[in-house]
Image 1 (cartoon, rainbow, N blue to C red):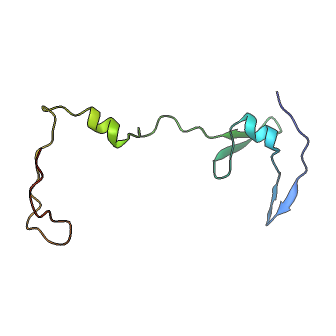
Image 2 (image 1 turned 135 degrees about the horizontal axis):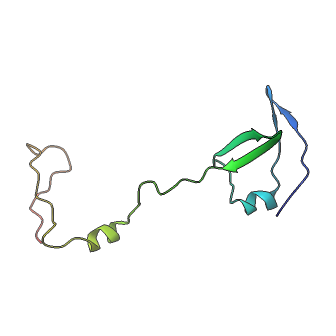
Length: 93
């Protein structure tokens, strides 16, 4: 268990404490991550918020590897071609 003595400092209308690097590393905290602060039995407790699961992230290679001839999506007609995104010739497979 890591511990440290810290000093409360004024920050705007509130107070702030500096979290020593060793303690931040122990809980995998970094700039921009969120934490929950609660008071329990007269003690201030700071808990990092751990995102559970969330949306899975895939690379293009992972998505393409999962494609088969049976699950290739059908072409969608988006109307008349316009702009620079229009292909000059159909893509061959």
